[in-house]
Length: 480
Ligand SMILES: Cc1cc2nc3c(=O)[nH]c(=O)nc-3n(C[C@H](O)[C@H](O)[C@H](O)COP(=O)(O)OP(=O)(O)OC[C@H]3O[C@@H](n4cnc5c(N)ncnc54)[C@H](O)[C@@H]3O)c2cc1C
Image 1 (cartoon, rainbow, N blue to C red):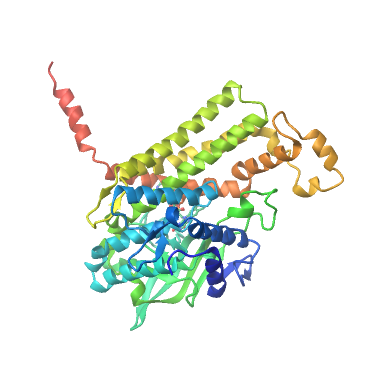
Image 2: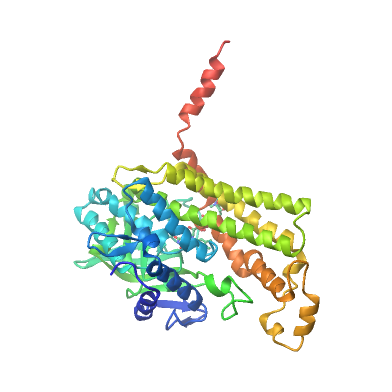
């Protein structure tokens, strides 16, 4: 099939009938449930964009069909840029508020398939499996989510270990058909809207035989018997686009995934019982760099969206000439310029890796992913500071249709906008900087790509610091 339409995605999701729980009830149809309908329909619009703009959003594959560009295994720096441009179009659809658009994991699977020898080195089957899985994912244009972390009831084992062996996802049996796994993983954003769940390691496993049951990488269909998705509280179900312009469109649900003796067919297993391969997987295959590409595109788009919003607020409130407002806008300009610059540098310096795929340069992407969790909360703070009580002077859409509407029209206008436009703007600002949706966005940016402390530590490990130290030593040895 290749690049799919929105209708194709929605009907596949309806047929899937995976086990999703919200507020004590099992969800019958995620495309119709009030908490999930908005995001599934937003994703459908993303898929439709591929059909509407095939040149910009898809590429031709071996069988003559067209697949989504996020599946490309780039053969040049230009291919990397094309992929980035496609990712930008998807990110702009939500102002960067949808973090888990399918390109995030599509690019990761493409890198892993290019690095099939990495998997085959343990077992030839695993190398074949990742290639076949990539082809199937591309052919069906699946929407996937992933889950990396085991639940942690205690910190006794430090960052990496899973002392809570009864809770962690683990191998309990192997049969002719596949592996059987039990335990839980947290989190899986988008679980209820996804067809496929990728289960990969992210924490470092000890090279000890006791860790073997935890050393797994596989993909499972979300409707596999025994697989359950337990959602958090929804935020703003069934509110209008006027009242909650972001949450009513882009709320990506987060859930904990429970595996109750789930059978994973052998052809979907990529690593089994191999700690070293688990620990090396993301870095060696360059999957993490491909994921960072999507992430930094989103960072750039999101910081631009927040800047645009802040400027419009300053215009409407007649504050463009105030020095402190200008200083804050300048700070936001710097953030978005930094994200764009890192992205551009990474794409310009893309190079062929040892698996034959072109990947963006990692250092600028690393810089952006370490910076953004600190910068994004400040963008939110600036929206709050520049809006102040206007964020609370926000009657609802129903008020505009009620007998009090004439008074709203009279009292809520501002220098740069009539009452309705002003209220709509500050409702958007609230959804970006104050609502539950906004709070989750901040939490997401702080943590979704890993704990910032450990990301920083990885950056130190991944940076070649020796030449810099040598330069200092040379300087100190100078006698003139
Ligand atoms: C909105 C959201 C969506 C997410 N979606 C997904 C998803 O789809 N898939 C997925 O796999 N994961 C997802 N995650 C999880 C994400 O990967 C983790 O939040 C992240 O890796 C951090 O792990 P943690 O939450 O267990 O925090 P912890 O490891 O518990 O860390 C919490 C805090 O304690 C500190 N800390 C922890 N241990 C130590 C220590 N030993 N010494 C000093 N400080 C320490 C950390 O620095 C951090 O500040 C999501 C997270 C969020 C918030």
